[in-house]
Image (cartoon, rainbow, N blue to C red; front, side, top):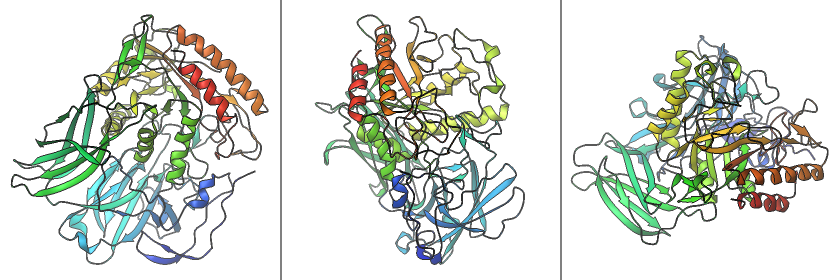
Length: 611
């Protein structure tokens, strides 16, 4: 049965920018299938959860909701409003209420109004965007505040100098050329087909304001485990600190202060709890962190909450001498699906936080212990749920182009002639966004492997990129190029792709950790749950769940044999169908699981326990 949104009332009292009531109309756009959660989207307050759970402030105000929008010439002035768009859903999505594509020659304009709570008087007010694809320019009350490029990273502006009495008028201009071979964009294309999907433009993650001190403020932290995951080094990051400023860092367990350190700004706090409880997929235990910034006189300046885990990611040797992925000092076979993170109603954006959590819960229910997040970066709450529920994550960097600009070699070592011919500006965009992504995501314990390249898509200067990645974060392993061109000694992992059966096309010969980064793709187009009526495909296709299960079981038996030969991880394609791809474990609308979950769990646990 197709899942459809029940259309809301054509005229309803809704909140514009969360605090500007007006009579407006909103309904989802288009006639594609939708998920069950689409009906739960509240246009007056979509995605109301605090967007940044790893660095949470007590006071904040969501700006998600219905904004005005217009599409005009790239170089033109702001046009008059064409209607309402539901932020934070991309303009191309059904849940935006617009469902329109923009081109490289277009500018997408947003505008809304909001009020600043009176109780925030005397504090700095920060405007936060969790993600805007790709280039954003921001004005408040007619004055330019700033700009940002990069479709996957958060950015903020101090808007205190721009605030006026009464209502604040916010305007955002977005440019997005998508597949121009310059900007990281993953699987977005202007003309979707096959493994390439509908482009995503504009605001696609939450927008909010929050007050901070007028002096120093806490903006980030790192939390790195060591000493066999028995010690935790926590380093707060503070802006505008003055001499004498200190940070009181508390390690909390079950609501109680376990350990406490007061350290000068820039100095790490090191905790060694008695009877340390180590995080793993079987026991995803998280310690809470409470940060309190104080000045030399002891006055409290700022305070935020976060969390951390005792878990250490290393290379280890098994009894047979094979290099393995290690978790907390022990070999851990990592097995999970390729997760594209697309939704038929929200495209890049899950309809609700419950929906975001659902895919992770199902992955665990299927018996997997890992997810490869495939050339997309998720909202912070997705990683929070992975931390909370206990799933390991391999994080890909979204590519700026496909394999057209280089040579792809999977059966031996590559050379410089295989490099993609990217422009220097494309490389600069790559490095800028990769560094920002790592800086923002390094606080999530679930992430255990960085993946700079997928296959040979925009793969360039591989060893330099590996070195760059390690310089940003040395606490995780680096999979230089999943299924890409292999360079001897580049990264910790050699990753081969093979469809449909699990077969290593090339191994490192013991020089690196060998993994099977993609296989499978067993397709079954389930009638009534398809994005499009035809042009659906999988690497292999069947007509029933029984046939899919039989083939999946056969591939699992083959995979178990590779484990004994030294393969240390495997990634099955894929979590859900995506647009015309019908090789998901679930249909695109998440309404149907194509194989019995209990059978999947049994098969997958046998693979993991084969090590």
